[in-house]
Length: 518
Ligand code: UN1
Image (cartoon, rainbow, N blue to C red; front, side):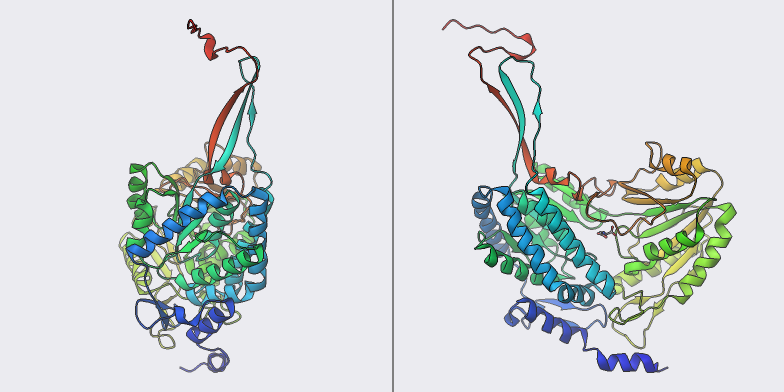
């Protein structure tokens, strides 16, 4: 059936591929970067190919790491506030390019316009944060037991930082790592997801612009590698890469972690989440409903912080679920560039199949599925649009304990608060969590040592949409890494403990005496 509004919009909007190419040129990516063979870059909006990129060969990886390694020798000597000035300029470039880069995120990752713009805003925010930090990379002085001595901690740049990012936050996650790495004195070698390499190249062009305005940055300070798993593995296994920050699935982290451990490299892992919200009897349901909808349906369920499990008190369960079903059925799915659309496409067909598989498993485990299934198949035959699904589960079984990277929200009932916490924590992942309650005791218990076991525990807001001021990451199968705010910068530096004797005696610690005749 033809939809007149959709047809009209089709006429106004250029195809994603046309738009992407125009934006890339405007952002300074040479047209010759797109070649006729190699890695196909497509837009999930229509499934059409935007262009191809030459994949980095082993020799390219080797050369990029070598350049980064020599950039390190230079960059670590630049005073940190001066390094901050470079990041300030990068923030300026991002401000100027926000609308274009955000649009490219929409085209390449499929998120709606305001989320694409929001992702670039997150980059700007972390740049601002890092600029301030560049004047506060502070150590401690520590009281020493030895007279005439001073003991202190000094923080030094750690070396080349490898950053592996996922398709769903194709640029922001790089910036959380890179802005800190740069001010901390480190070069960055970035392997973006092979599903979203164009946004990475656009960011690299902006880094180069900032570098020129800075008066030149060392060659190799910001490298981008194009390719899939083999490229990531080369980065992970290279002795010159001091730290690898990797965002992706728990399966990816399980493969990466032992390889990094084998060579004692530092790892910042930000892996799967299976985030839940507890909805207590006293919850403000109007507020909870809006928060739940954004957290579960937003970004088409493809955030690592997406809300995937609802644990609802039996007294409010039916009321909340019936309102949610209504919200789910009214949500507009479509081309994420169109105003009013709240749900864009899934990244690709395997993602849709994963969703279908989880839903059929939920059905066989006694779940009642509302929604789900393919959407807009006529209009976008080569893309993967899905109706978000709400699933009433008899208990936390079937697919519910694991993460499916799609818009599926499972709901179970609880009777008492301890039971809710037990269900909440009884999954492998430990990224983000929420409670909706107006009962102070419940809120505090949820955030206490005996409450949520996640890296993020929120009250009366959903689990997604974290801002950069707080350290971001989670426990258990989420990998334990922390990026962005708070004191996450310490991961990008090595700490030296320095003890200085300014006396002419040589007292030994712990009262040890060791007198040699000299
Ligand atoms: C991710 O999905 O990998 O908290 C990161 C949020 C965002 C970041 C998500 N600021 O939802």
